Length: 240
Length: 225
Image 1 (cartoon, chains in turn green, brown):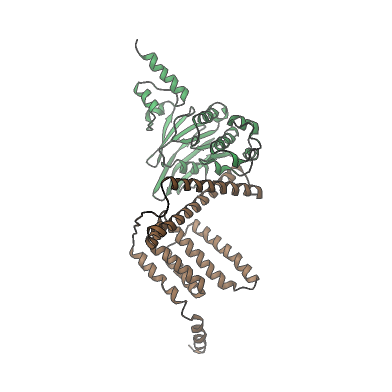
Image 2 (cartoon, chains in turn red, blue):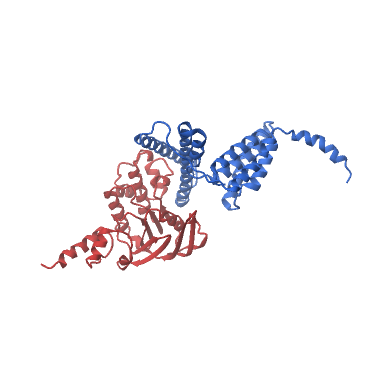
């Protein structure tokens, strides 16, 4: 199962995005500043945008899903139960994971934006898709919900190790452990490598990581647990 | 066409001419073919198919009810084509620029703001529809009456919520009536040429083209080459 891109070019007005690379099974994190082209890339990877030059190929992938930044664009039914069913997801599992138990018969319109976002993300994450692309999954969520989404990605879906999950975000506060790191710089998608070696090439201004690296401590990953564990190593290394 | 004043003027002028006279509509159609600078991409062809399909259905209904179907088809199709051309070149702020230029900072600003907000909403709806279609495709769903009603309700609800937020925002920024705005325009030589080429459409409203042909045709037919 692999998603491969060969010298693809996407242009939108004066903006252009060059994509090249291979996405094997695992969790990929693509970061980039606001307006760097993350949503354009997500739409291209899912096949909604066809590149002017080059090709994007999905080998061995039959079920794919894009979690759009605006969750309301996913809605195609009127109630919570029907919406979950439209994704082919398990109702009780979704409601439990999203912390929305008791919402079974609620109208979709009665949910807040945050609740709707959690519901849609959980529908996608608890269903089995071979390729999942999450475009800014943390946008509009509070800290607790962000952590819940990251936990779902990292712990409750072991299948992800055989599938491809691509997270595109600029919000680095509650990330799950990832396998591969990518970055969009000046309209170009750059592969930085596998964790944790990729962290040395990362240009994002992520202060906790920068501090750790300046102290010659390399965290195993970029999730909160790994960063905390690395921070504890600073204390251990301080001479008494 | 860069100058939004000329573009809007040409759009209104040609549309009015096309609605008032079928000959003016034919002229406007030729103006569109020669001057619109349309691109031969799939999107343009897609738009054209929809325009012809939509006007074609209405034309058939007009013909069925005994109306002047051919004249209607020519006039309304031309109006749609001209409107599509103008919309294709529309940029954010164009309508506010033109409106303030015509009506000043009070009435002009008000009308321009309303027009800009309306166009902005149309763009949002278009983008929403595209995204919802993507979601349906990814879910493997087909459009049904129940899904359509859910989508329309949600879209309406979202648009109303957005309108309320926009209203609150304007109020919190002290907006009451009018504003201070200085529009800027860039006029290229091509804009002037295209604008001038649209003028003859108006002449056709006053020239009895049918009569000319009525008197001219017998002479032409009796002439032995």
